[in-house]
Image 1 (cartoon, rainbow, N blue to C red):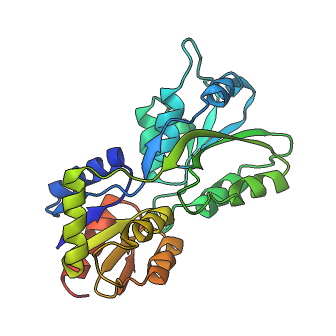
Image 2 (cartoon, rainbow, N blue to C red; image 1 turned 90 degrees about the horizontal axis):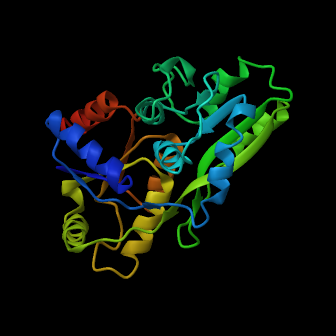
Length: 266
């Protein structure tokens, strides 16, 4: 069985390498592409407001890498600034960008789930938030990509009295499959039972359905298997018709353990 990692290209290749180190056969099949925003001015302006912020929240590793990639020359990083992260991947990206580990606010590793709700459970306890300035760094969605980011966390912060601004540091756009990826795609469609789709985004499943519409693949996904990293993504995979859907936290150990259980027929 081959694991198909559907994250954006850079992250997908990182996960393929990490899975290979643990003896898992995997291949990158990105179902969402990441691009810089059409207008970089809002991100550059956001950098000039950091000294006024109590908290920056990054919704994903892409938000971190793209925000720092557009850092204006000479822009300082405030020493007291704290960064909110929904999970281990985003926290790792923040550390790689130079953010001190003790400045990162994140759910505990035993939280079970890594999402906005888990992050808010930590942030709420660090209140009061009345009058605090918060910037949420996220992505925008191309018109051809289905789905929208959830606004739940910004709503919770506003209800707690914080002043919340949003900035899009990147765009999510439909994937562009080269010849090699098209060949991998054809194999996955022809042999669904021999592949395991690893989904970390419901939008990736949206794109899967869009790409298979009219393709010469299976008429349904009842023979296919999906491994998802959140209950909402799992439900989306079930709605798409995947015959078997399992869930695991988005950590390497948890993903490898889930794959092992699937192979063992548990």
